[in-house]
Length: 271
Image (cartoon, rainbow, N blue to C red; front, side):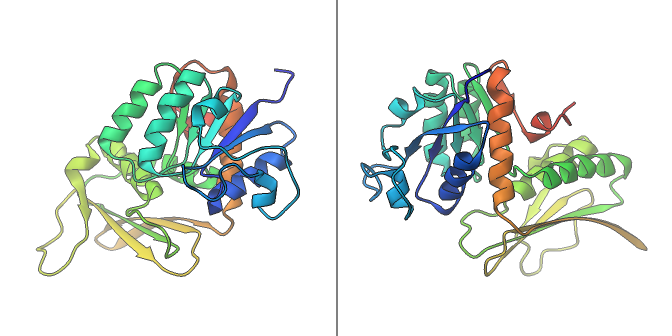
């Protein structure tokens, strides 16, 4: 591909949206061709650059996602579950690569995204960082090597504005651990312990969420048995690493067949 793929950023006025816009603008391999916001947002109808406190970009923020997607080869989407499901259908119509960093998606949301992936490339991950995706792979391998005498606990910490728990990354790690054990996470997930809960169930995977301050993201997977523990941990100190991963996914998806992919595929770590 000789021409730079065009990218549309959804939720452009948000903290992550603005970061994605800046990263695309700095890229020498992608070009920004559109910015989408929900109807009624103050940015709609205004120049994106001026909205962000800079100079004019010639890109007008729009609430017409389909019109914006029709001009793009990739859509980068870190918004809300309801918005993402709608964007998946529209991106599929436009045959644009849809990079999804949205978390908190329900099983029904995922089914709808799966349908959209029949017609376009969808790259979805609870976390776009290289380190976290390596941690996911290692977690699965360790879980496969250890039996249920090793308890698995996942602890995640985020800033006080995060609205979903456990985080998408924590669930991704839980899925990896469950896959390593050969079980369904839905059958062994243990959340929100409080009060007289009784002893820990053998083979369960526990989740714990911490919210405070401006923590970017910390994830810890603990394997514990009598007399010893294995602790795997990832710390994120710079939110731009998620944006850089999303851009990498947008580029990677350009020559791929329609379907659902994740960052392990993008990084060449998939099975």
